Image (tube, rainbow, N blue to C red):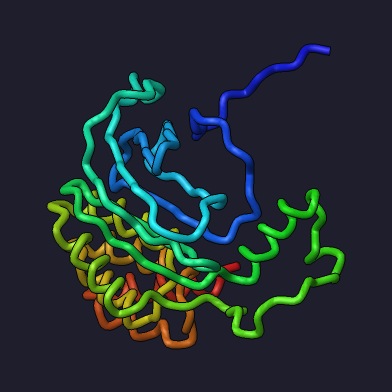
Length: 243
């Protein structure tokens, strides 16, 4: 039987033992450039603009982010450094870092969700699916069971990062990257929608963010940012058919 080795999208170049994950870290670079990330002495090379790591121990870690051209993305020593900081990772906390094209970082922290916890348990338990077996190990009663919206400070940084982009298309790229890794209140979504200049872009993001909103019953207030009735009707249709 022929065995084909498939090159993963992201891989690191040092040997390490996979530990039971106590932390979760995601790093995203605004835009579509390939990136290289150096965390302590571990070199991660990514063909796209994001990376998620779940085997780092709690504590301080050196994080350096390099931009690389697509044609040279797999060079372990190549790239222009755009971010360099010491980041503290807390036990049972999901740390999300989004770096804009100016090198300014938005850092958000959320407690690991129940799903994150059991995903880690599965990997550390020989792949056993605790959730499927309905045989949950004991966990802290304070572990959140529902998504939490971005904190005010994190949201203000995210909004400013989006606002600094020059065009609606680049604003949309950054806004979606932030939405993919966070949850919002309807009021927060409204503030982000207002950052777009054109009605169609406002509507696009309002649809995109609906699934990442913690109080969907209040989503009617998004209509206040639209100029045309057609946009309000299209959003209402989208919500009615949302699955």
